[in-house]
Image (cartoon, rainbow, N blue to C red; front, side):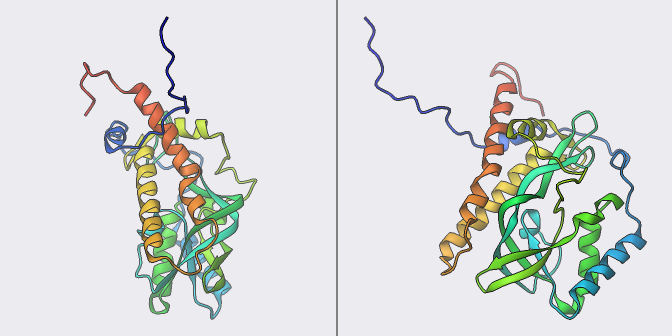
Length: 263
C-alpha cells in the first residue's frame, strides 16, 4: 500500500513577475488614432487647467501626491518630498485604455485612484520659481483628453509633518465613465494581454511594482520615526495580487520547451 505524503498542501506557490514573462507580452504595434470616443485636449484647455490650479492654490506651495510612476519619474525638479497617505482613496488598475499600451482588440488598464480605503505614496513640492512651467508639463503628460480634466483634483494627505492638501491625477469619482472597478481576475486578464506602441501593460505593472518595492525597501532602511500607517499594505496588496494573477496567465499560455519563445 503506497505511503501517504506528510507534506501539507499549502495552496499555489506565489509566482514572480519575471523579465522573461514580461518580454513575452511585448510585440511591435503601430501607432493608431487617439483613444476612441475621447477628444485630444487643446493647448488652450491645458492653459486653463494650469490657471485654475494656480488660482486654487493661491499663495500656498503646490504639492503633488504621487502614487505610481510619478514617484520615481516626476518630470520636474522636486523641491522637497515626504511619504504620505491619502485617506478615502485607493490605487487600482482601473483606467481603461485602447491606445498607448493597448489596442481596441486588446484593451488594457492603467493605475488610477478610486474612492475608498487609503493609498500610500509621496508628496512632491513644485519649485516656486518654475511653478507654471512644471504644472503645464505635468498637465500635458497626464491629461491628454478633454474628458479627463475632472480627474485632476486636490486630495488631503497625511505626512510625518502633518496634514497637507496635494494635487493628484486620475482620481476618479464613482460615476466616471473612464474608470471601472472590476474583479482582480478580470483586471489581470486584461493586463496580461494588452500591448501597444509604448509597450505592454504587463511591462508597466512590473515597472510599478519594482518602483514601489524599491521605495518601500529604502524607507525601511531609513526607519523613519513616524511612518504613515498603511504603507506596507499599500505596496504589497492588490498590485502584488495582480502580478501573481498575470504571472499565472502568462505561464499557462507560455510555449512548451520544444517550441521557441516568440521574439
